[in-house]
Length: 176
Image (cartoon, rainbow, N blue to C red; front, side, top):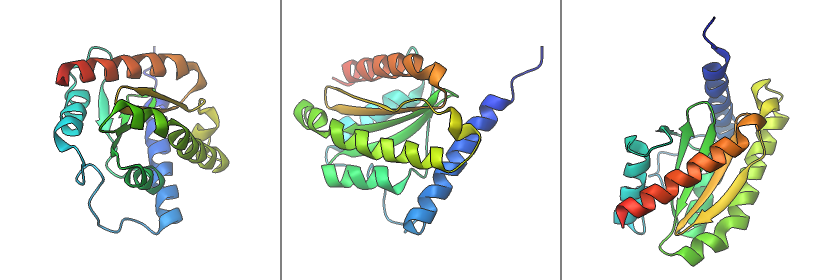
């Protein structure tokens, strides 16, 4: 049976497309520090990020997106949250907004939904074949984390949501 090459290529295509859309929309990287470097609560946010990216969580393996779309990082700055974006294998992209308290994360859900919805719409409108298979964006709050998800495939929506939510819960428990 041949190895499915389309999935890794789809991930690369979507990440590349996201970078192109980001650069064209905002004029490229200005060289400023990322919002995770401007952390308002560096200990908790850093420990949370380290937990997710360490591979010690039971369900997911995440790889940090080095150049997230400017719209998602600008939202973090506006909301006063620490932010990082990570790809979860070929399932989708996870957007993590870490706040100092649970209420702030819950209050941010509508704004995060809006920005991720706009990003998904821009990707879909780009006409890229892989973008036509995007699932529906999902945003939830778990404790001080607002979690946004952009599934690469509608068939992976529930799996991505279930696994990423469990990973957030596990890491929050681990760092407390």
